[in-house]
Image (tube, rainbow over all chains, first blue to last red; front, side, top):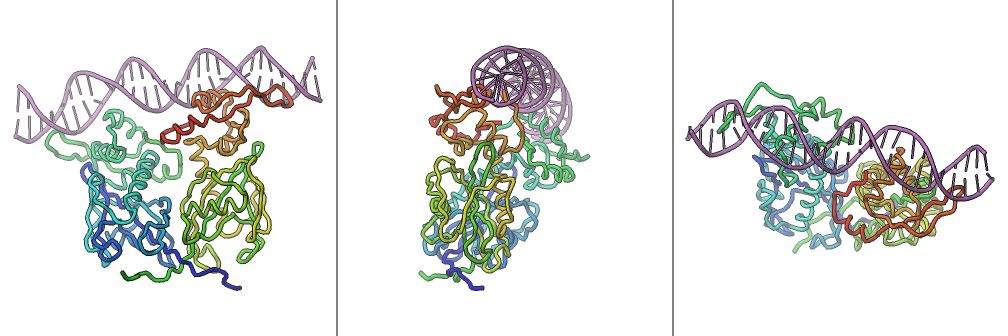
Length: 228
Length: 228
DNA sequence: ACAAAAGTGTTCCTTTTACACCCATGA
DNA sequence: TCATGGGTGTAAAAGGAACACTTTTGT
């Protein structure tokens, strides 16, 4: 059988919008580019897709090289393919967003990154390429998904208070929620297990909860889970 | 500045799930492949992305070559990138779904397609590559979007009855809707203009409506438009 | 004793659902 | 005249939004 295709002249990358959450702030992991083009600029972690990898595998590789984390929640976004989005080559990118628990990672900038840090989403620097647009798309997707799937638990530590959880939702949705209504809905969803532990704070103790992973599996199968 | 990229070894295509709607049946436009691989099999219309095109432009080109139609509703789906999805080359595809009004098209199979036809979604033949999976993804996306955006009007003819519209929703959602509740919600959404025309049928005349495109623009900007 | 966060129920209103009859037309 | 599809309203239930006070602890 004859090969009938031209040599392709478009490169493919993956870029990862890696979300973390730290005491009421949503954060994104940025790297400083170690080489041209856009050397020295802040950018999303990413890399070329290898011939033997699926898009997901590429994204997992990028993520695990940088954080050592595997097996996290990931979702693919729409491709970015503007003709001039890269100054030299024609490159289209398959973006992903990933949710990483702070407790699990240890940053490990590699050859292509001279530095890496967690950046609050309300303090983003100027970014390389069209990475600002990719982040906006990821934030939109996160806002959509957080109402449909219990992904908050992918970002919070194992044990958390109701306030922690509410802070997360408020940070993602960028709106205030009523405390009593919030707690009632979460309890109604039956996705939490109340622990016999409290967190000591400056004031009244707060009850700690963990996520009920049995329920999660049920929920993941039903598409029509709506929290708010 | 030095070019630092390897010659890419992954090809990129677009594939189009083109939906039509004909008297209560949702349909998809299929082509018969005129060349290897998978020569003679039914497949989605598609083609290689050109270096000077965005993904959307590629998809529009494929669509307009086949149907002569331009300026239709299109939405990008997640990339399909399984390593072995194509038997010869490494090819990833960016799938789109498009909505085409029957009144607007005239099929025009071109060189890569020896035949083309509108296939009822409940009578799909065996398809080339992973095109069955792409169609499933498109159907899922359509089900999601039909509740959020007034895309029904992209598929119906200019003038239609309430029953036509309800048939469309029922075909997409694969569920029966209550007639009175349906009509109330549609009227509440204020997206229809009642015409001074009726359609003569076997029985009582049915009032014709058209879509209010002024309202459409308003709706498109607000993300949280929910019909059902 | 007071400041600050945790915890808890009820009422009202809006939205959704379920449901039945008359009308116009063609055969 | 009857069979078929077109057209309309209401009542009950569920879900969402708004709202205030008491408890605990540290200072």
